[in-house]
Image (cartoon, helix red, strand yellow):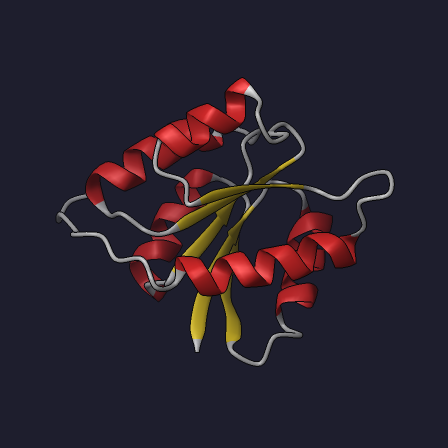
Length: 137
């Protein structure tokens, strides 16, 4: 079972992602977090295999958190954001900061079903990545 942590400040997005990911028999959403500070605690508590992360959040943006978490407690991370279309500067920064992939949130003709199918495949791929962990987040 692949354990996933969803980090997004939108309750609706957390709920939709949880529902969509629960359709995959090999994926379990072990926790959700509203911001990076809550995410840090949940990473330590639940030890997820993969994290999905939004970019724009209160208290600390997703890219700053990604850089910090990759330094001290690396975890395969997929960015799920409306701010990161493929080829954008933000997308490049996310990948440079350690993200495994960047997936756009649904919009227009790109549906929740389209996104969740891609996300499930990327979570499965990301779960095979391993990082060396350093103590002290």
